[in-house]
Image (cartoon, rainbow, N blue to C red; front, side, top):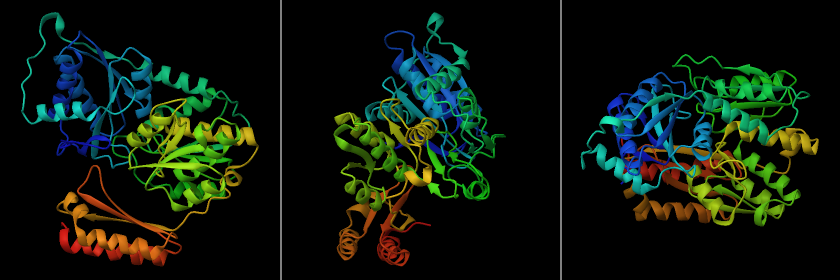
Length: 446
């Protein structure tokens, strides 16, 4: 059905697309579904945007109304919720966040006990309840659930992260941009426990400054700082701290493609890279595939979404996978992307090899890439259109292996994403517009 659930849960503008009533209904169905065999516990976390408190209360009330106990971590990262769901006595977990979106958006992500997004069958049931296809009877008497303050859960998560990456970081100069989001409550504490006092930017959330001109989606000011000061590595988080974009000492961004390249080679050299393979999505830069091929490392491709990356990783027990956007999954540690874990894993590589981040990324040439979003009336009709497909095929034929053009639907918005990679920016622009203009003409929306 996926009427409300996209690739990353339910997401939309707070009190427009996602209001307290809808959050309450999601909570009610989760409480109903997971109380069938007795009272269970559901853990809830939230990021720092203004509407998160409202949605947290509504979600928790719905859960308790149907007979499960809601445990509130408070402000935390998405991976903290995932970790607690898997490793403690919770039947599922929910994170209230719209990730890298502006403060006025919000969302609800739900994780199963296995630490992955809910199966589509359960999402369909929740959507059916939201649309009035079934009715639920409130729990009563001693079946009513409780709402429990569980801020110690965040302590458990941070303690676990430090145990996973116990290196002494006292000799490194580290700067970080917390995006005025979840990392404001996790990153500094973790690094302090590892004997490091990082220089921190944007760690004073006020409800409306999350992701605003800061963090991994707006790193320009931070890059300038790194270029003009003497630091070993810079870290930039997104709003819910599940992804990481690094900044090297020269102010250059080190995105997910670079991180997969560095981690893939390092784990290969240590003899632990399963089948000498990393997992990425179709949106990874062509340069990554070519660079890893030279290293004798294969790449398994999936559709866009960390959910699909993890599914592929589980098939052959691949240990590293991720997306260009900085969602990196290290399967020996977690089931989802974690900006803090990713940062510590890359710092561990720097320490073990004695190389700088600039040295580690040598050998990967990034092809120019252009992504254009086209708002459309019907995503499926575009993808099935013979003229559009013929144009895509012709562009890829013209590029002849020295680039590619890809069209894919957004998982959360009425958009088609048209992406080209080629040897020059000019070629990218020409080929993207060739296809995007056809889509706009036939299916464009205001």
